[in-house]
Length: 320
Image 1 (cartoon, rainbow, N blue to C red):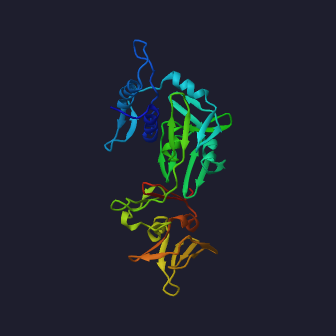
Image 2 (image 1 turned 180 degrees about the horizontal axis):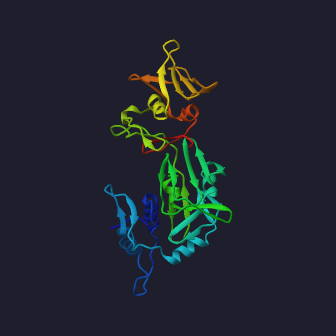
Image 3 (image 1 turned 90 degrees about the horizontal axis):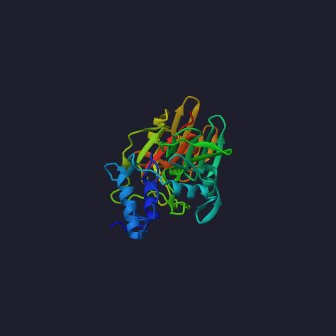
């Protein structure tokens, strides 16, 4: 017997689905017009909606069957709401309903979650950063970036009342915040605490993606310290098109690509990037014959956008 509340089941569905509509609470009355008990309501919800979700081999929800639909009365309740609860604070926001999708105002949500936003007029997109996290959303395009990996949610961002709106799945799938809904149509968003992934249970399965492609670095070639994720910078530099050589006179590792020149030296926090000096969070370290630098410094060293997520995906993306 399912012993979670309807709201908890909804939170699970939203957190895992990536391309289809949300399930909604079922009617509180049975076919005879009698009010169902909470347990019966939960069972109805589970049988009518959750069983119709499509799962992959890992048991994760990846979609729903065609029979699954949103309850129109419940959608109307959602559309009447004029606020969201974000990290415990009530935030004024309109929630739009578009077919089988709930849409929320992007800037309102991301501002409240602590992201810095920048509008790119050329590409009609918003770029957002929060610490090492980076994502971008392009208007009228169903492609959202998480750790430099594109995600499709089944619904493109849209312009409404001079604001960009995104499907609610964006909040859970891309921003990795917890989202819950209740039978009254209230939406609550709670950001997860920022944590550096830690090696555990035999080691994190690390993957390094450069410009959208995995570069073949083995998982054990990345390691964590108390406050940093250390990455093999030579392999990353080569994937970005740099030639890498160690200067025997200075002991520095030099990266050259056209007119670009970078010098990194073991034990020194100051790095030379062209004619500028960049202070790294942690001094480079040589381990097993390879040079390592903190992932947080990749953006300044190579002038690229970077992202990392708790599953171990490390993304580095240069501007096209």
